[in-house]
Structures are given as C-alpha cells and as structure tokens.
Length: 494
Ligand SMILES: *Cc1c(COP(=O)(O)O)cnc(C)c1O
Image (tube, rainbow, N blue to C red; front, side, top):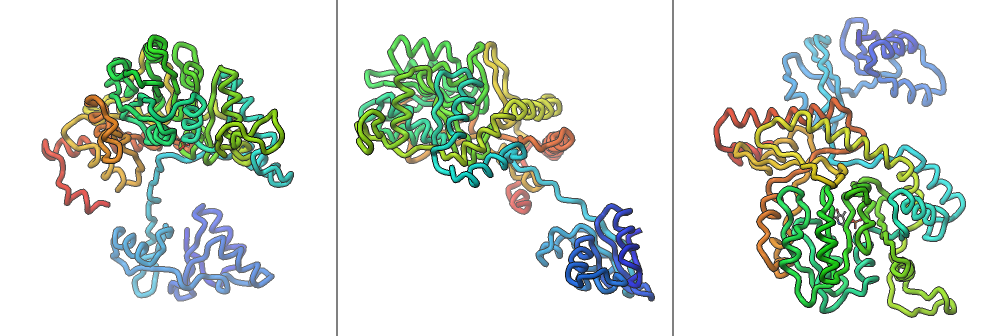
C-alpha cells in the first residue's frame, strides 16, 4: 500500500514507507484527491526545519511532485521526466479526476561503466594519515612502502614509483640511454603512450605487427625489423596477455638490445613462473584509474639491475646528485615523483590486489560461460606457458551480422559501456611514418576487438545480463537479414 491520507500521523506514514520498502508514499486528501509525495528524506528535512515532529503528514508533503493523466504510456513518462530534468524519479501516479488510478514503477535504467576503481579498503585511512601528518608530497612513508611491497609481491629486485605509466616508460628509456638516432621496436597495436614516450626520448619508434592469437608483439616481426640503429624492444603485454618472452629475450640477446616491458595492462601476469616486469631490463606499470590497481595517476618501474635502479631514482628526482652537495645536478633529470597521497592509495590497493585479480577473473569467466558459444565471438586465448590476467574482458567480433562499431552503439543504447580496441598506431596520420612493414593483424584486431565492463562491483547476474544482451543482439540481427542494420536505425538509438 503506497497511498496515505494527508491527516495521517508522521509515524504512520513512516510505517507505510518502511513496509513498502520503496522509500516513498503518495498522499491524498479526505476526498481521495492526489496531493503529492512524501519520501523518508522529506520527513527528515521537515523535522529538521520545524525542529519538531508535525502532527500530520499534510505539513510535510511535497506538493510539486509530478503526476500524469491516466493512459500515459511508460515511454511518454520517461521522455517527459527526462525533459523536466527529473530522470531519477522512479515512481509516478496516474490520475483520473484527481484520483490515483495507478502507480507506475519505472525500471531503473541499467548502466554498466567499462571500469570503476574500488576504493573501500584502507585508502581513506591512509590518505587521512597523509593529510593529518602533512606528508602529502613525494616524501613520506607510503612511497617507500609501496615500492617495497610491489617488489616483494612481483618478485622484482627494485621498484621505483613515478607519477604515471607514460613517465615510467620514458624514464626507463632515458635510464637506458636511449635517444637521438636510436630505434625502439614497438607493436602497432597498443596505447599511444608507448610511441609518445619513445618520441619524447628523442628516439625513433619502429612499428611492427602483433601475433594473431596473443594480440601481442610478434617476435618474427621484431627480428625482421632490426637494423644497426635498433637499441631496444618494447614488448607490451596487451589486454592482460603476455608476450612471447623466451623468443623476445633470445632476439634481444642475439642482437644486444634492451628490453623494456610495458606491463600497464598485465600487472601480476606471468610467463613460465616469472612475473611480467622481471624479464626485461626494466618493467613499466601504470596505476591510472582504469588499470588493475590504481593511484588515480601513477606508475612504477621495476628492474633487477642496481645501476638502473639508482639511475631511475635519481632521474625521477630532477637528476639531483645524492653524493654531492645539495642542489648539485650531475645528470639531466625530470620531476617524475609520485606523491605520498597517491602512494597511500596505492598501498591500500596493493593490500587487496589479489582479490581484484580474482574478481576480474570471475567476471571474465562469467562472460566466457555465455559468450564462448555465441557464433562470431572470439574470446582471448590461453597460451602455453603464458599466465595472463584479466584487465578488461576482451573479445573479437568476427561475424557479418553486425560490425563491432554497430554492436558498441547498440550496447550503448542499453546502458552498456564498452571500448573498441586501440587504433593501430601506423594508421594514424602523425605516426604512420614510423611503420616499416605490413601490420595486417593489428588492423584486423583493431577493428574486431572490444572490451566489456569489467569492474569489481559487477555481480555475476549483471555480467550474465550483459552477455545475454550481446547474444540476443547478434541473434536478432542474424534473423533480420544477413546484412547489418542501416546506420540511420543505429543513429536514432544514440
Ligand atoms: C595505460 C597504459 C599506459 C600509460 O599509462 P598512464 O599511467 O596512463 O600514463 C601505457 N601503456 C599501456 C599499454 C597502457 O595501457
């Protein structure tokens, strides 16, 4: 029962609200004429305002609440609530001659963002400590503690925190002395931070293709593109998958090249029992808001070489000498330090990173349960010796029912946030001059791949709901015609 007379006591109204579990009652007068709504929030505010509990709910009722005439359809209601700037209203009465004839309950619109940080551990406590103690810049216990914990957890000899993942890659290249005249081999299918960092170091990026199965840089393509100028290879462990490290390290050894691992999307992944970030000369991590763990913005460089560690520690701190007098610089450095505030969040995240990984895996497995059997959808492969992690649940759409972009639009209309795979670097105007050989796999994967919502708060039921939506969309469109729906039809949806 959601209707209450305006001369009822506040306590009675509270009882009704409590029983219905909807947080709301509709108020009518003694002639059953609709007066307005009352929520538990209205009652709270009323009591505060009157500094007293009023005798009847009539004094508290919100009289400007919306109502609709009998016969209004749900979609008309939704439209008009949107237009009135009240999309949050979930229950409305339908009136005939001023009397309530029906109460329409609108379905909460489902919205699943692609990613969402989980910050309900010790994050607040540690940040509070920073603020109350005044340790908010880059000195402070959390910076050192995060580096220590990271080294311990991922079996790295040394870890250096930095302000973001791109700075991590740039610092790594600078520490290895890579610059003008040097070539760095990177995959064409990756986030642009990789190529930007190489260019920032003054070196020349060389874009090569990825493997069709792992989506990661192809050792064969690396070897094909080595020249006298090649100084380093940057394997990017893409979408949680691990590069073919044995092959890459063998090539690096043979040609005396440095290896800078980009582990931004694969924290915790392993290649034959070795964590990513421990196999190359330097490993680079990102703690951006959508990564496996976050510090808001942040990054890390790992290495097993003490000399590189010392150099990176110094370079991130303006290149200031640690042995000489204060303010004496003996190398050109950067201010790439992470703040204690960021590290505070990072440490709290580290405490729960195993759980984050497990939850992401749960979500991925749940998607796979439904989507594995959907024709035209390909899940990520598991490869011998490579222990991938789940960053964002990733799939390829390879049928001719819908294009990937059409599927993305249809899902968007249903409140499902997705991401297309990265755009191949060699196909962008500003980077295309760095392509040296064909990259068909990068091109194919880039137009077929997409990521689905993957954040800890997604329940199994919600994951299944998303997966079934995809299954349905593909099935419906397959029935309609062998061709994709028209673009006009799609544009109306967004
Ligand atoms: C996120 C990401 C980066 C850059 O990290 P930021 O912290 O955003 O600077 C680099 N490489 C890859 C593959 C990434 O996904």
